[in-house]
Image 1 (cartoon, one colour):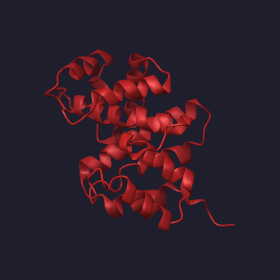
Image 2 (cartoon, helix red, strand yellow):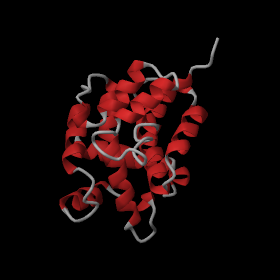
Image 3 (cartoon, one colour):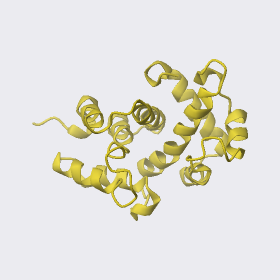
Image 4 (cartoon, one colour):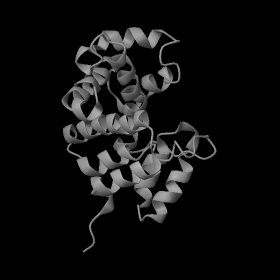
Length: 189
């Protein structure tokens, strides 16, 4: 029997690195993966499958950054590489404009962790130690009010993500901070 590519992190990592050269985009993929994997473990879901969907959610962004192309081109590439429709639809669902409904726990979790993981990383970078160890829920929420700070991160998506996931915002932020702390070496935080 052929190995399941959806659960093969090394294979997914090779795809990510083939299409993504930017250190910050790679770190973003790892941080979203970290948060999604933590939720998968807590919810008794398939940690490898969930983690790899998160790892690859933006793999095409560097080459295809427009809303007309991302994440659609990525979906086509993954189809050619043998990824199933559910996996591809999960990745499509993280972009509101894709029209793909977030109708599974995985889709909701990926969306909820995407912008937040990036925002937590940005908050960590402005701490004196530049580490996630110094990031607190209150500092994340305070920075969310500062429209000039990490302005490309959608505050609306962070709020909507927690709501769709059915988790209080403070609890969601704390959960993602803790997951990222446990993996801070790989994340460079």
